[in-house]
Image (tube, rainbow, N blue to C red; front, top):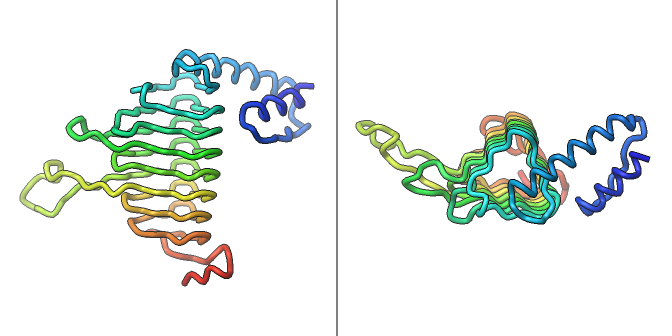
Length: 235
């Protein structure tokens, strides 16, 4: 009974089917249901809107008025989300932020940042960091592994006689296409443009540049490994 009930609730909230493994005990599912119910109550209180969202314990939300979201948003335990920026934060439908994710849209009060846009059905693994000062866009159906970091701003350091902290910053922004898989502990730097369907191996460092669609990359810095689709002809 609990399995069927949970499947109906997932379909209602996330607008997509889920078949729950029948080996999971009803007691486990009941505990999960109670947890999600408490998270939904927090969502109403913390986001101050009627649209359904699930907020875990120990979550910090700043500039809530600049956060827009579709139904089914999950912000799990211990996350820190600061939307202070020009454009704020936009989460699509059924976006999931796993435990202890940090999202900072502004690095300095002297120059507020651009913000963050995440499409539908995007999941971010535990411990991710998103520095959105230069703007970050992540397309729908993309998977972000655990401990991935995005840095959409660079410090200037050309003058060796002046402290780096006083030389200002540059911002190009980061764009990630649809249906990508960014592996665990990948670092994505300012100016990276990742086209649709890309896969990045765990631990890769993604420097500024364009990464062709439906391709696999890995290494430090990330280099092309092979195409996912033969006719792409990437070399």
